[in-house]
Length: 170
Image (cartoon, rainbow, N blue to C red; front, side):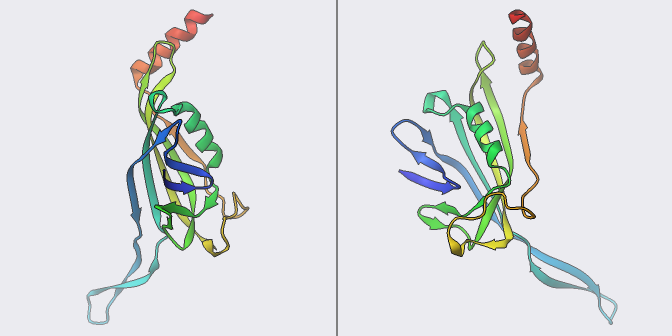
């Protein structure tokens, strides 16, 4: 059963894996400007709407059929790509979403330093230059490609363990 999809990436349950969305946040802000009034006070003028932002979080782990590091690496390749985001079979917005940031956190490691499980958080922004009316968006088109951001959170203990393991292999 498919919960959501973006750029041929799906969340939900298949026979081999479960990638259920834990958190979904969609927001949009007003673009405002402060102007001085003739009577001496400040007046707030609404100029337009800021681009929509979307944040999706889900867990990955070998126990549920997803390699956390593999998911992270696959998502890094999708950074800057654009497509419609579909949730529950319906488009979330009239515009395409671009993947701007990927974060892997709350990681658990095994004795060999493999990431057994972790939480992935994806941050998307709407591309105001592209509409989703034509179906699939342009993937990483020039001029509108987002800056690639990604992070892998490691604790000092994780770093020390990884260094010790790499020294043992030498």
